Length: 212
Image 1 (cartoon, rainbow, N blue to C red):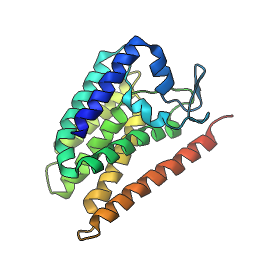
Image 2 (cartoon, one colour):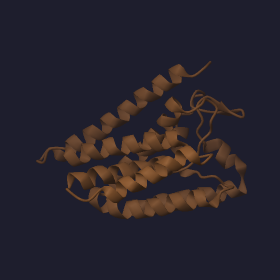
Image 3 (cartoon, helix red, strand yellow):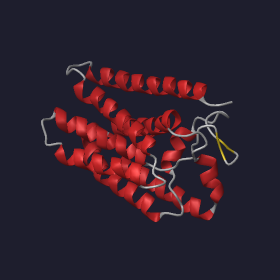
Image 4 (tube, rainbow, N blue to C red):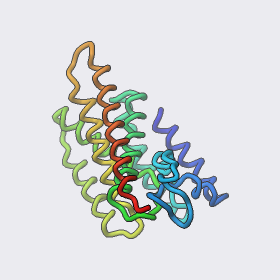
């Protein structure tokens, strides 16, 4: 499963982070600069994705919670969407979380963690369950609780959560509401590509707004 592969990559990188702080400094994401570490302006745009595979080396619960949530959500979504669509949605949500940081967070604020992508999966599950006529109340409660934590607990990036949540929801809507028929798969992939283009455009906008 793609879910277990993502978890394996995150755990492997976390162990490397414990061994060498250079791993965190090389792959974290920060609009502009953080303590001399270049961010997207250098430009190093891949950090907008690689940061989602890192976690705080000093806080074990950070990776533990994210990987548990990914495991639960992945088991529900990956069989529904298929490996390729699930992976694409996850990666788009990860980048969407970084776009949220770029547009809404303070400059020089470095971020790591899969929570933006995980929130994207929450948003995706909400959309898909709602389309299927399922009960979404538990999902709403989980999103609300975790969303509030981003505002009241220091060190949590609510901007990444919001960016990932919106991206995952939009991506899932593209998949769930694509008209049925022989062209459905093509329309789904075109829709996901459009989401990626929007994220790129928003990134350019965010870079334009960064202080020089």
